[in-house]
Length: 447
Image (cartoon, rainbow, N blue to C red; front, side, top):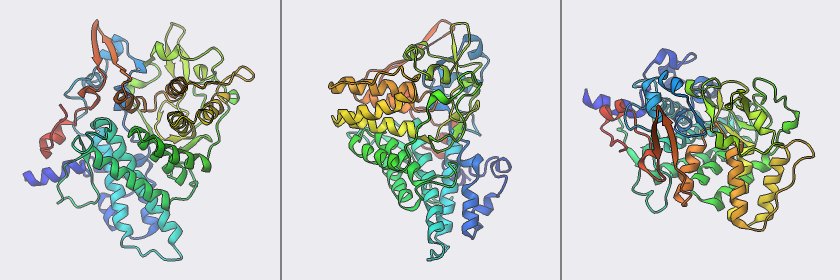
């Protein structure tokens, strides 16, 4: 019995809450699906692959705060996550770890099933597309897991730093163990490169992955690894396929949710939810609000003025209370701009930055950024990255990588008169694995 528990939990309770998990197909169906249409159906399960992104990176970040009353009204695990505690951070059964590995299992099921379906001249395009989607989703969920449960990538220590389990099949008899950070990122990169070869340039709908989205996600991964030359190449490839931006002057900033869902910037759509993050509870960090200039439309598009000195976020690219966690052109453009600045290609970096900002400021008010100082250009771009991408779950991995470069960013919160802090490069930037996983698998816990 002990062995059975050991092998099930790291795959992460693929069987848990099975009735809720699959409305369309049972777990058994994952294994017996026989046609390409079956495989596409498995990948089109939006509840498993698109709307289950985790919120721990955002709750643990500090672009928002809770009042004491709202803090104490939350569940214990959310309070612990908010104040960077080392225990009881995730619910024991339905949790982010389980969601991530459930998606990995589904991707692996499709990859295994495809091996039984001959690739022919007649079905090659569709076969490749389905394969590319599966590899994209496996990479995406391993990358999300690395952001939460592994330290920032450091080439000097990645070969020994503990990462997350890497599952490349569906056999429950194969034990899971924590691979190194280097091995985790290597699989993410390899999977995304396979997906790039297989996917169409643009998908029939952004709820499905595309080549442009895979290029963008690969650029994100390489940015997190601080491999800026390579990140530039893949961001550039993504933008060559799709680079259109919204002009925020065309949005109705007075709307409850001004940014439309599935807008022209979205390369791949996915999202997360979270009661502590909702507009009526989460108050935007005043230091973030202060970064927006008077004519910067993002202040009124992204944030609701509560008329009491506080602001709430309303600018999700989901056009709703849910929070966009997909891949979008604005992020990819900022990745390319940052990498160009780090490569000291300043005119090109500034061209990307100015392209973005021209679409974010009131018409005829924007003055183009100019500088020949590399450090200043990098600082401008990183500031705009923070202003452009709030509440997308990206601040957490950004701070982890930037602190590896000496940024010295400390997180701090005060609750009921008690100060909590997270120092640069501390173990607190690596969240504890759910206790149930540790208990039943024997994996080493993050300390």
